[in-house]
Image (cartoon, rainbow over all chains, first blue to last red; front, top):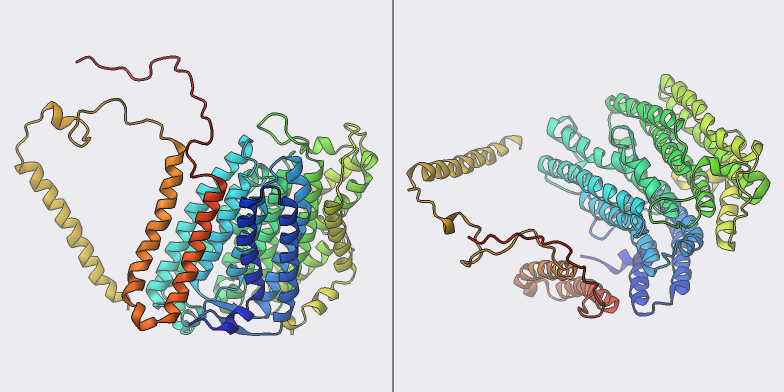
Length: 475
Length: 137
């Protein structure tokens, strides 16, 4: 039976879901209320982050043991909410430029956020599934939000078909796990460790993992990532590549780290290695900046899996720090790409997203070139920036678990990645301008770029601030 | 635990065997007298006309989607009604929350005007060539 205390213990989730429903209702009756809906969305996200900080030192099971609130779930929830907040801040200018300024945009973003929170906080296989579907279905619609553009429609259809197929894997995995353990609740599944040796249980967990590996874009299931990221509206690409990934990683990382046996370390290591290889090597040959960032996000998923494969005390710490750093730099880069992109004249292509168009950007638009350079350096892992410390902690965690070969190859791959990041930087700073366009920047996107750039520097110079902010998960 | 699945396996084998036997027995025993009306597509006893591949109005899908939602709602309401007396107020509140969420979705569809059928003026495409060839015999 649901008690009143359950509502008090899940305030962020309630804020997000109620505001999602309210915005879609208000928006359908008052068509001109987009401005207020935007404000309500931002307020809801900020309020949810504010209340989440209160749960960092708590430990609850709520809604009949369907959801769990503790320090680790709250940590990942805060990072996901922060990613959504940053991308929503900058989204308004983009969707006005592309003339898709509908209320459903914000409300779908809020629905997907609610899905992320449910997923991260789940304590039952059913809640995992419900959260994942809520997030994914919102993302399918948002991917096709530029409904007059064929690229956007194509990517939405691809994403939907592949996503639905992978959901089948996930559900089959859940049904096998249920068949063996006779329960959906984690409390009962992990009660008896002898079941972990049962082959059917292992097949079930492997299928379950495949569903999440698809969402994270890991090696054998990464093929949708470049096409979907290229076709989706740019702010949505930023949202999917950061918040969606945080939700997927935040859901399964604690289970891999705390319950999987060391025998699986090799499997995760190999997947991580291949993901980094595919992501970084394929990115070298790309010329579309959205595709480059898509492959860089595949590579980042590989780095994250290095930390997960370590399976020691440092895993959660390093993965969460890298996720925050990755959010800042990847989302910052996508926001700048969305500002440089021009509204389409025809119905097919995105304009001004080729790296040739970034030539001489430093001369014509230094206010965009400087932060983009910071984000790209950070993605490449240049020392005084947050991305360096993110990779440092991940590889350090791997070394602690004697995965030295994996750490060395990860470092080599991140050296390879510098080529395509620095190619953009060289194009921006050392080439004559391709055109003399000066791009208009509204106050909200520049605010989110400023926040991202500032925090990239802050966590790069003082990484301990992050661990001081989230003290309890890292005791 | 795992051995319990043996019963399901036996059940499955029986099911497959039953269907297969019935199917093949019918194949061998049934008299075969094909005629024109027997071979044609079944359309409630009427003679078939035109192609099956016609384009439906997109609004049918909206109605179908809404129908499914409320259909599922009714499926949930039946077991709820059976145990309603034992659960009391709790069950009532739970179902009220569920219904309110569904009704909100319905209100959204209404407010968007998706159920108003004659509002948008459809552009009727010109028929340049005859699509269906009508057989005289």
